[in-house]
Length: 141
Image (cartoon, rainbow, N blue to C red):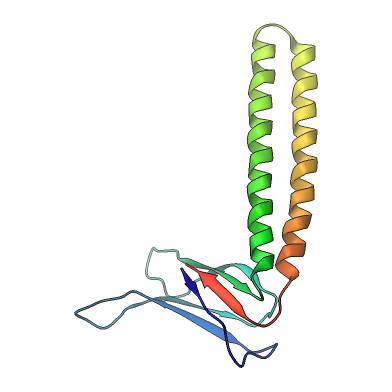
């Protein structure tokens, strides 16, 4: 993981990320490049030139990093909500298998509605978190 401050960065500047491997005996090889112009960007960049048949990406946060951290927390919470919904749906399937279809239908509907609401709330947190920025940056890859 690389973390660094972009000194002299001005909103609207184009930032070119070049990812290279580290060769001790030969010159370093380029693994791909990506460009960002949005000062509030936070997320995954697809690297161009990663090689035939390869897909590579770089996670980037421009700003103070709090937006990406909040987005990560929200994504984890959304994933937990979906896992809980899957568990509830499995329990509903078990009810259905035991001839309790009405209870199964109700349990499944409630699980899906609860998960959908929680994911919607977490998505709003993710969006707001990614909007925050203040002129320095960090990235991890």
